[in-house]
Length: 298
Ligand SMILES: [Fe+2]
Image 1 (cartoon, rainbow, N blue to C red):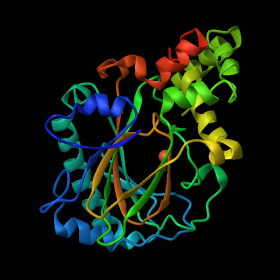
Image 2 (image 1 turned 90 degrees about the vertical axis):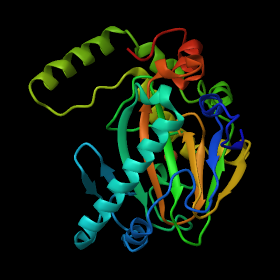
Image 3 (image 1 turned 60 degrees about the vertical axis):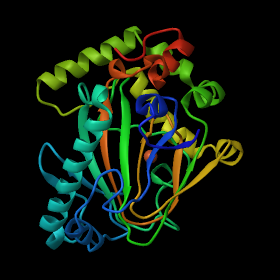
């Protein structure tokens, strides 16, 4: 995997789908897209308690609301700054990835305001251990998690560690992590009964999350990777320092990643339809379905 600088001759979808980072270096007037200094000032002025329950401050574009802030007096300024970043990031992404934008689902933006080095978090929430992303409350049913990050620190680099992307990761570890067990549930009588019960409860207004076997496996895989000392120690590692003002894009369910240090990063997520990929066979769900010999996402 590589950090690929964006440019006119770069095929953005191919770079991302093959498990690379698409990189926009800092430049006069901004990196991938300009961020007004008033927005940067508001973000750098936001304080967050490292003991907060929420790992990050989240902005939900569909509700125009922030969550995770401890100091409520900062809500309006932080929300306005995050709304601005979210809007600019989405416009920028739609310009450079129009095929994805035609079908994507806009997800949350986040603000990572706490220094990552030395951060004390429970094992499955630690950012300094390599993992692929999966969302407990927002299953993707085989679609992909694309994230646009910007280092909004005025002075501090953001230190990333990555490993070989999903095709190699799955070949090496998916069976060790129990893929067969999750695949066996797909289409089974127990699974069908569970989904039927879920539909009945959902219709009755119970807020339950319906997941495909793929989503269940990926949630498990996220935790399994973090807990697997052999993988963490012995997998191939690639180190990237992202300077202040830089922007980078990555499918975080394709590329194992960890953050070793840095403070003040913004991020916007979109859920990319597998159908809009240049090569849908590279989707993690497609890879796992080939390995399992069955559909995992219906
Ligand atoms: Fe992550």
